[in-house]
Length: 424
Image (tube, rainbow, N blue to C red):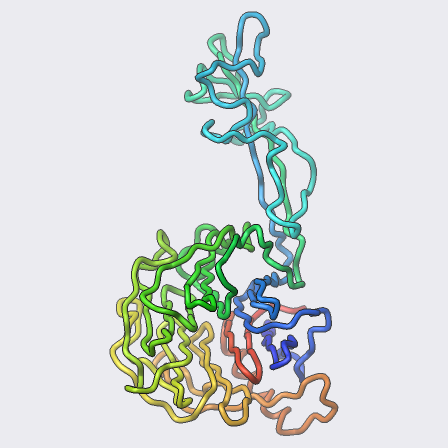
């Protein structure tokens, strides 16, 4: 069975990981940063560091992250020069994309960030429709909007060939800062971040949803995250009817947020054609007069913590009813909570600041039965008590029942991130 990793950050911003095949929290020695927030899925983690910058950690894999850049060289025939780059004013660019509308000379292609590298130089693609072309890779047509063939004909007036260059993502198993030129001039720093949405669509591969909240209470969405673009492309602001303090998104289309004023927001209209959704719906606080401080969502569950540290479960949540139907008070007091892939719930105790997991969570009983403490020593602690070992074994047995679970917890004890990966 593949082992699972739990990632954690303590109050000093130090990063730890716990493997179900191990016996203690391992300090991530190569992490020279201090973190405030971390959100994780199977293949990567996003974080907010104490310098208020966004960082990304992409796990190493046997499958490289490669992206193919391509551009087309276009030529027209004339009776003096034959085929040449002397095009008509109405023609497309000499170097263009496949449509001919975008100007794409070879020298204009730049790496998205310093975390990428070129595998090799540009080369001509000498295949067309699965068949080899003549030497040089040219394909021919009557005119540029027409259909191309690999064979030159008597009426072939234009030709083009495709140039290809691959770039590879090299920053793996290390924290890298998302370049400021990509994030743009954001008005204020982020103070919360959440990642999910991998079940919304299968195309493009590895498509994710990343949401963030700024200190001014604004909500931002990171566009363009997928397997071939792990850093995403740009931040876009999502208008909200108030100031948001915290946000959570699940593997699917569930996104909830907490407002300063004390209510909660639910995002509607999320789908494969609109990852950001279209509108917000307001949901009342679980406890009248006591504002929520934290919300956590999964596939079919929503949990919340109010200012009096009470824990609440939202019943009736499903893909057809993201708002649910009502709140149920649960036993226990937590500083914060979060939800894993299989709707498993994790929490940080209010009194002891220990990490807990919710026992008895099943598809038929999503609220679970009881809180169980995760008592595991860190590698800096020399004594390994039998109680800790016993608790670890219970945790190991539990996580082995789950598949690709991801969870994030932040606050003044441990920031817990659970990912499931194979380790050999």
